[in-house]
Figure 1 (cartoon, rainbow, N blue to C red):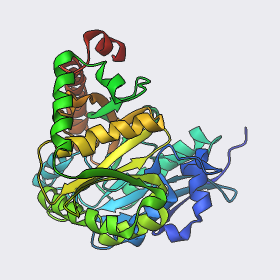
Figure 2 (cartoon, rainbow, N blue to C red):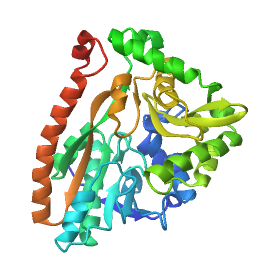
Figure 3 (cartoon, rainbow, N blue to C red):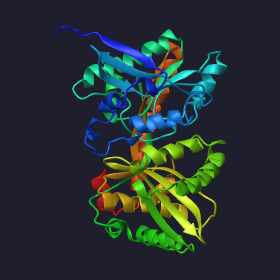
Length: 395
């Protein structure tokens, strides 16, 4: 078979590529108006990040979008960024950076294939159907070559799919395994159907939490699509600022991002808001995928018992059941999610390190870490809230 020449390019802005071309690689399943499997790699989401200043100059996320073409046809793209820090990634490599710099190396800048500020699993090597093997290899080789040519310390692909992880490992990248808590829909007809699958004690606890939350003195509403209005984003921005200041020092997303979300992303989102005495006092933002609901941000201006659990976890389950979605991904960390029906699930990333000695040390660490994560998932699943038979089926 005659080999075809693949042209790899680095683009500093999504303005340099057509939206339909990008989405033909990122979400071909959405042609005709269907929901994309991954809302976060769509052109409209990544473009909103860029145009709002949530990535770019001064953020530590400098776009370096990777494209691969054969005879002019775009066959693959990747959301690639040059990083000057390790914030907003949720696959933590701060200790790697400190160790490398203590040894006299320069860890930053590094390259990151990721969706900024978004710990949700999805394809990171966005290949047009029919070019899976060729496109994946081209993107990985192109990204590694870019790192080598610029003498960068490392390349990272975070929250990739298990299939991508296997392909990348076969090409020589190092595999990292971590875990999150996801709620899995076992064909429940309603929330009570989900509760029936839990042990009696956990079922009673959740009912008590929901009752306490709903007695906060106001109402809870869910908005999506055209029901979302600018006033909702004004309120949610206040909540988001509070959470961002406490967790990260400064919010990752700009105010402009939410204005752009109103214009181009409102059909992808479900915003759950709590109102009391005529004011919005708390909110949780979710994104729709074709198979999952992704919980992303929460914040409040008033603290009420269990309201966080209600808005972030239980209302998300309500939405997923109503929409027939297979799971809820509730974001990074949080073992408190376990008692609320969210079980540990593996997440994957890939890593390439330029320095051979440092790469060997990280490889040894990752091997031990994978074993520890496997054990943690097993133990946490056993302590989950489900009836014993239910746990065994999900394992």
